[in-house]
Length: 112
Length: 117
Image (cartoon, rainbow over all chains, first blue to last red; front, side, top):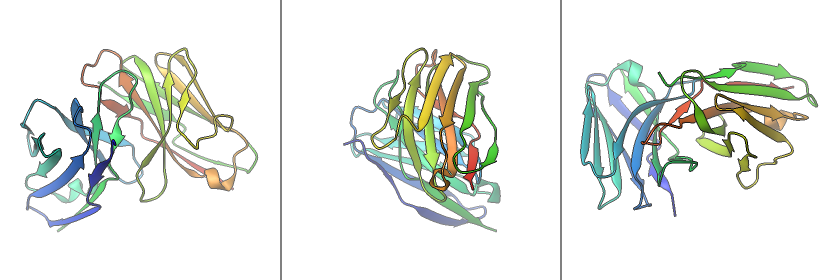
């Protein structure tokens, strides 16, 4: 199957780190992505990682990929109230016409 | 770069009318565009995959005669909700893939909120 699973909710205090986890089932996934959706808006691509990488860091964002366990995580350092949003994990088997397969999204609430 | 626009951003219409939503890739060419529907506090539901110059591929359970998709150019796809009814009220989001990108990411429009009275 091509299921992508995420926990639905996460609550953290401002200034703490947030870790959002995702598991996927397709071992042939080539790229994995993290998107952010704020209320009433479309999805914003935050970052992506190629399947032969273990880690990718971009400012406050760190993506970790454990390909053996099919586990992807997004760590947000020094979480701010503006980080409150829904975060979607997604995978793709190959490019071209194949749509991304999305998880159901994790709603991150940041408490001031 | 990689901006996708949607128009209109919101629309209210009477039951039985048709509504057209436009999706444009502003600074890249998109061979493939995708249309999603999202209910409040729910995940994205893929409706169809649209390829430039060919018929759209609809997901199971999506009525192709009700949701007409046209992808006439590499920068424009349209979704027409025909004979709209209140149950069609939803947030519709389009997405486009840059034909030159090797990493397959999809860029999303800001969404269109449709309310059918």
